[in-house]
Image 1 (cartoon, helix red, strand yellow):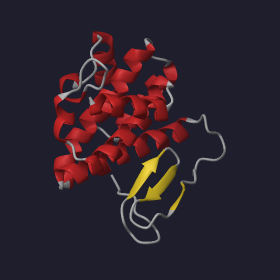
Image 2 (cartoon, helix red, strand yellow):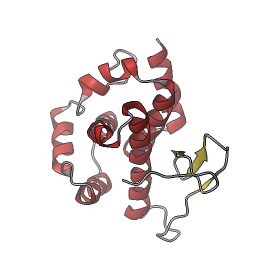
Image 3 (cartoon, one colour):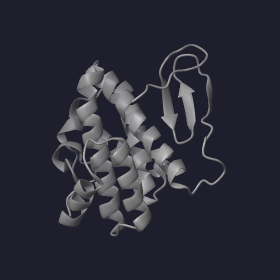
Image 4 (cartoon, helix red, strand yellow):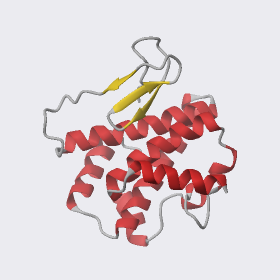
Length: 181
């Protein structure tokens, strides 16, 4: 997965939806879709999902100080976010299944069926490690420094909201409150 860097100063950028912002120089901008104006196309949604995963990866690299060490937790947290969001919605629409199939064909770390199987079992993937709820917080969150935490949560919000339809800003506010308890 590529790291997105600021075109002005070259520092890593924080990604939120279709926008990016450099924490170093303050430059910001929007990503331009290469897939036309149809925002509902699978490619457009896939691009949003990839941006969320990239944000998680950037935060994990900040936390682990190592790109290789960051990959597995990135994929685990992505799976947690997808399965949790689908469980919250209570049903899996055909568009979500297609998105999962395309995504996991492109990134074969697991399969769409692995994700759907976790949803059918009623338990989010990797919940003991990554759970974020008012009742419980997973073990991963206990030692994440603030700089990494912001990027990881931003990415998780993007991933989660794609499958749940929830507002990413409201998710972020709730999660930060739970982590501050």
